[in-house]
Image (cartoon, rainbow, N blue to C red; front, side, top):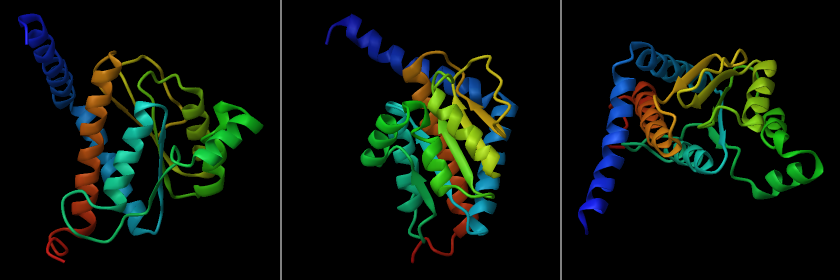
Amino acid sequence: MNDYDFERVCRCFQDSIQSSRNCLNDAKCIGDIAIVSRRLTDIIKDGGLVAVFGNGGSATDAQHFVGELVGKFKFERRPIRSVCLSDNIASLTAIANDYTYSSVFSRQVEAFVKSGDMAIGISTSGKSLNIMNALIKAKEIGAYTVMLTGDNELNYRFVDVTLRAKSKDTPIIQNVHIIILHAIAMIVEENLFGNKEKHA
């Protein structure tokens, strides 16, 4: 590998580390992640559901997060009620074809999300209309709404908590989003099950 390639690899790590450090040094960012984790814990305890959705790479982040909730994050325990609205290709394409792509998630929110549930939308730009429409619909229904996005100046009045990665670079934002989602999965798993099911 030549020196230029070596430097580019190092820069990928350095940029992600810096953005993560920026979040770590922001008390509001860390506090909001803790708030969302506690709220999701309470929602699951009450028999509620978390619906997660995104486009492109954010769709796979949503799948990743739901996979860790339904499967496991660190230890054996019961599954956590969650669904990824990016998964059903038939629903996505039918809604996009019969209605509009901007309603592919809001239509599913109407179908699956109830008052007292949680809806998490992931948009690196923060401008994805289908994500915003779904969170608006979830808020109307009475769900707790969370937006994961990047370092933008947008104000999401329809969102209870906005979790911002401290970057404007899409790949770096996605890297930090995974850390945030891992933190939530870890805290929720430990809050719900503690040590009692680690060796179940």
